[in-house]
Length: 136
Image 1: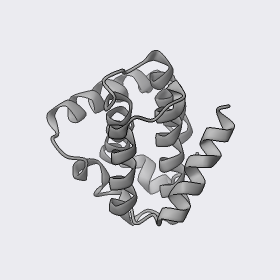
Image 2 (image 1 turned 90 degrees about the vertical axis):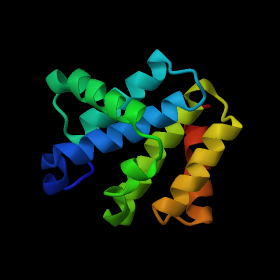
Image 3 (image 1 turned 90 degrees about the horizontal axis):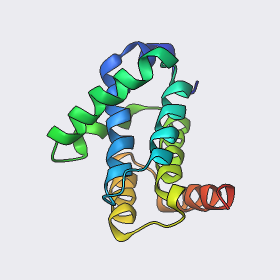
Image 4 (image 1 turned 135 degrees about the vertical axis):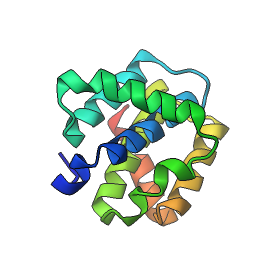
């Protein structure tokens, strides 16, 4: 579990983080079971109980489908400590590279998220390489 208790209690916060993960998984128009498993594992690490994970994913899918910009998902995450934002970025790169490749839409999404979450380019590149090596 990598977020503080106050953040975990904020159900809306977790749903938006989940919506961001789903958005990353769907941006290449190929939402796979492997990506959903990564999302489930991440939610579990965030403190969502196993029995509530499917419900949380369904709520997040609705939010993701009805939103037209990623600002909706990142607004609350901006103020997180650096290590928590890095953990989110690691999860996002894991989803993107679960199919062994990042397309231009996925790469563009991550570049935009780096700016929105105030993650510098070097840190973003280091995280990307770490995840690529881990998934080899």
